[in-house]
Image 1 (spheres, rainbow, N blue to C red):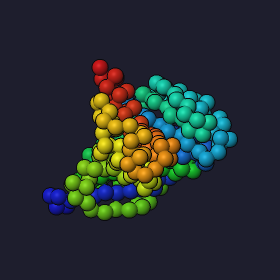
Image 2 (image 1 turned 90 degrees about the vertical axis):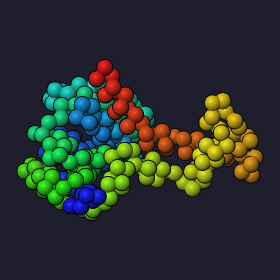
Image 3 (image 1 turned 135 degrees about the horizontal axis):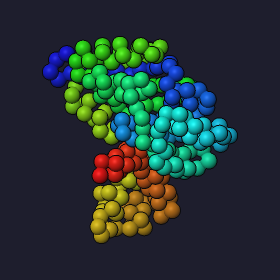
Image 4 (image 1 turned 180 degrees about the vertical axis):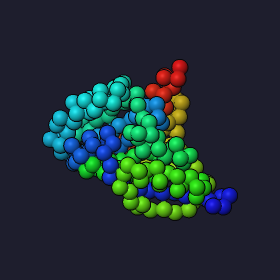
Length: 239
């Protein structure tokens, strides 16, 4: 591997580790996990309320068996909730821990769908890439979904909060409304403009513009939420 290249690898894993087992019990619920080996942020979401029935007690049972502590449980809607966990991740129960053991960098979030884990990591040498694959293969049926070589600059964006994760769910109108609000000083301290003034400049009804803006804000905040929660809870533990 050249001085400026990084392996970017995405995997599909079939195994019997705790979160995959939980996903097998609730195959129609999407699970996203952000982990820094101190705290797990877990988001559960389904398109149907009935798919979530029984998930919370099953999660609590799993955490008790692991000896992990539930720090916080937030129910955002009947079809979406978040759990903050003081994790017990180790190489014998966590793909994230195995990837870090191999001196590679896991890219969050890890996803679980239908009992299958989907994860991504960065490897800076061929040796660490092979070490990670070998370690994961010892307990999982592994499929390499994609493997590419990216620049270190591109890799840096994956380690931080990915821009596409923040903005990809926004429609063109929502993104335009958000950009206009920023450019015209709506988020300044103090505010340099109002919703009415921006809507007028855009030739839109106030209610229409505000709907686009609020939806954009909600989507961006939701994308940032697990990263903010992870940083906040970890800082409290460290303190």
